[in-house]
Image (cartoon, rainbow, N blue to C red; front, side, top):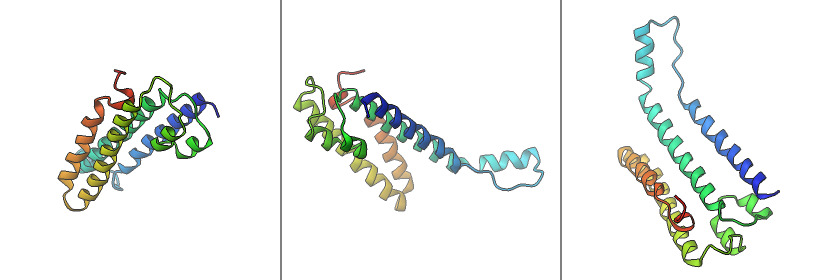
Length: 155
């Protein structure tokens, strides 16, 4: 598989994942509802809409970071296809363009580790402190908004 086909496939996977998110928003079964009842039913789904928006943003961040990273990958192999988001394999296999310095790769590794740690912490916080978990996911959103590491020079 060449790099452009790999990226197109990955785009399709992200598009499918984002599309599935909307399935979490379902109106309750109602028989011939009035406009008021329907409005109330829709408004009562506000937590689902927030979860959808946050999940959409997180998935979008992952998609953007994937593209930012693979913009500088010169070649892919079968293991890259299987592991896809595994940064360590790309570094170990020397898949990056020659212009990508070890310092930029190190900053990328740090940025990825911060993100993964925050994702895990936010997921665990959701079990006991949902509002703090929500804040952690928002922090991730803003953290990854700023390019770091490999894509730091790309605005």
